[in-house]
Length: 204
Image 1 (cartoon, rainbow, N blue to C red):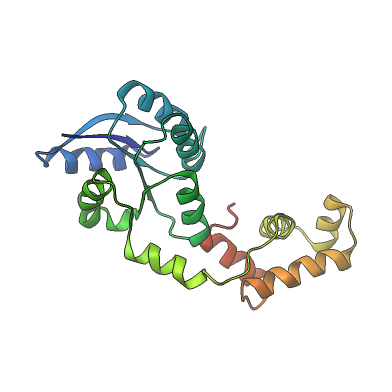
Image 2: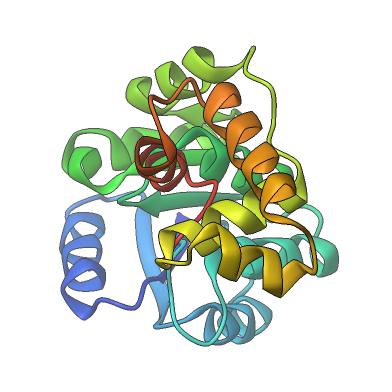
């Protein structure tokens, strides 16, 4: 019997998972949690074979929860279930120790086979997630400062306001923006923000 823990802040998602798993003779949902910290507590209590983890949650996000669980239980097998397929978001989750990554739209079709595959020791990414990673694998990564500037642009700050926050000149800010636009292959700063959000480089 594959014992499963579901960690998601949406009760309707957890209910859907519970119903799906209830139809399987070789699976059992042993616990649920509504945020990352609660997920860690439930993992300690239940020691599930498979943990299904959302990324965007209150209190503690999924990536931090994955890292914490894997630090304490290196053999933990965790599958990310999220609405986000951005390559940077995926890479963060995999680096934290996730062994599977599914986008919620494909749940019914892929969830059960992914649970079995990861339980058997394999890694599993949905095809659209794998394609997203492949598309950007050769792109230059943004520096931490470029990411910070992009976040401030997304929040509606002007170059002058961004310069004041970092104690740098307008020209320096323009340089950061120019490099970010080039690395993201964007048309302009607004397009760069859109790409940054889509790929999971920044969030609002």
